[in-house]
Length: 110
Length: 113
Image 1: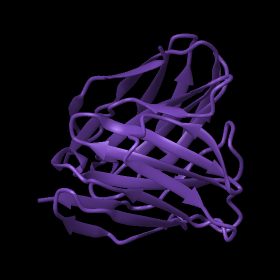
Image 2: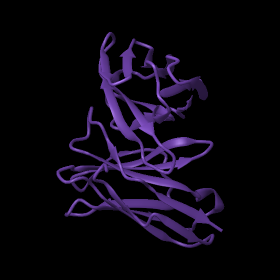
Image 3: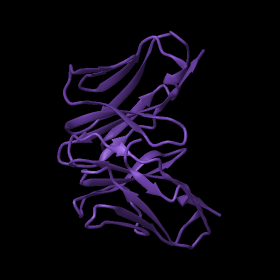
Image 4: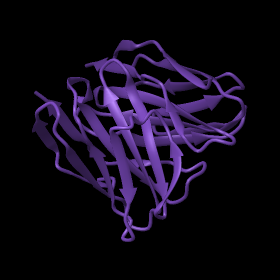
């Protein structure tokens, strides 16, 4: 069964303290892996799509990387406005549905 | 602003009732997805339509149904409501149906009393 597991469930960092969020996945064949950011009371906001192992994408203080079993979202020198829940999702070949992880709640303290 | 519009924002109703949630996708997007988000389950995929046709089905209950109309807006119908159906319901849209980033609306919060 296709599965996505995110860790940690919650993370508190001081402003400027870099860290990484993990997304482990099990799919029969990965078509794409997606990262989203969700603020309270809002819908998820698309960040990145990764397609193959070794691929990296960057946006401001965020960098997403992909291996054959997991993806990391690296946050460099975070600011309080980076506080949100970060969701990882996968889509497998032969199946159009998207499977989401439960997310990591990130809180950046000023 | 994602460009995806969901109405209503909040809905309060009683057990056994039926409700309809509405979604207007971003201009140009042909795919519409419906998700249920609860605190313990996270974001659960329900169903996807592409250009009016059902493309994929997730863990959607038989009491729930959806459709996509010729103008591409979509409706999710929930009937015989139970307390456990209380959740946030999100609609998302994308241009195609594979490898496509999805753009989410801000959801409808459904409360069953």
